Length: 125
Length: 108
Image (cartoon, rainbow over all chains, first blue to last red; front, side, top):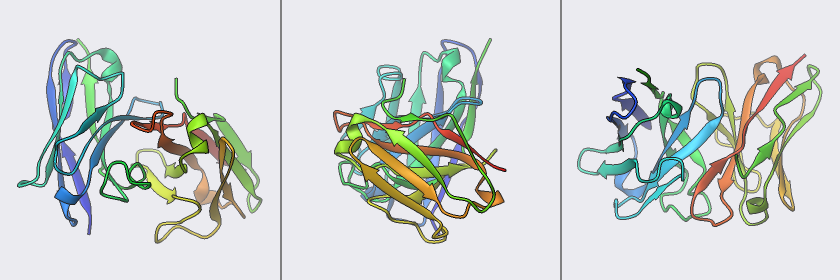
């Protein structure tokens, strides 16, 4: 059974940093690109970032480019999101998501069949 | 602003058919996938590809596409279908992923 479990959320001051983790199990983690998707309170879904299965390629939404860094440790089946220079508008539930296809540019590489339960990040003073 | 546009809210009478649409230039090149999200829960994939349903998704859910518009159709809507629905696809460059703004479906 595929499981994605996020952790690391919490309250942080504007300008601060936080690192999220997503522990994956039930599939061959290294064979799949993985994504982070966030949802601000009462708002819609926003794709944040993705990383290839090997970790060699990364992709970011314009809203987080230069501030967030996605990474993975395939030996630990864990996905990370390092968030720096946090702003109030980064307040959201952050989900990790597994796509149907492993290769990022595959026709199903952006279609997410498994999601974690999410972890809440609150940026406030 | 999202590259994919959805109507903010749609309503349907119990047992009737409803279509939720998603518009965007990238949909001329890429299929949309559709997600159902209920309050306090993670999104659930309901339609992907041309018109495919993951295991466990009722066959009253179907997808279609024409030009720059993708549609999710629920034939015989049930009370449990009341939820937010999101489409997603790639952006116009093909390098990034985008979501529509979401449609709140109310079943009357």
